[in-house]
Length: 172
Image (cartoon, rainbow, N blue to C red; front, top):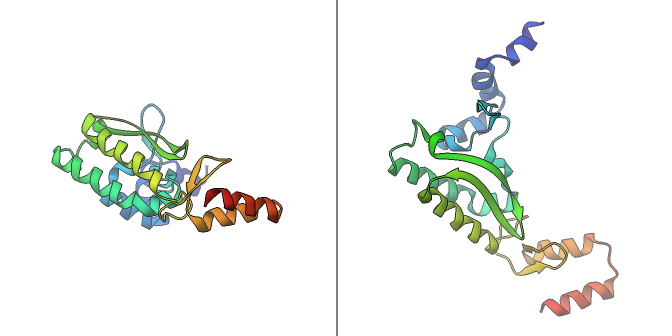
């Protein structure tokens, strides 16, 4: 095995090597370590190449991602477990969109779950694509999107112009 291949399998590479290749993610995790991605039943740290935070769709991440992170950090700090043993209190599962809202599946206590539920409900008010306040519910996909994203989705769908104008007349 070459040294370069061996180096990538070591514990030090996961912590130090990936910090140099992904400095933005590294500094984000210094501020909010609970977004780090762990793999497997033993919870091995994957590296800074992928964060659970990046699983939040882009529009919602821009609209409320920083506020969610700040509120979780303040609550963990108030509970007295901010830097030391936060993994005992908060473990992320699947993060995705479902029925037009953000779903943050986590194993955590009631205090943290209240914050997570709050941001799941708030996600109905923001566009999943760009993060601006929403106006339209896309009928086919059950997604709330802003008017510009709605128009672009209609134009991208290759529907005839009279069908698009009838859809727009129904939404007004």
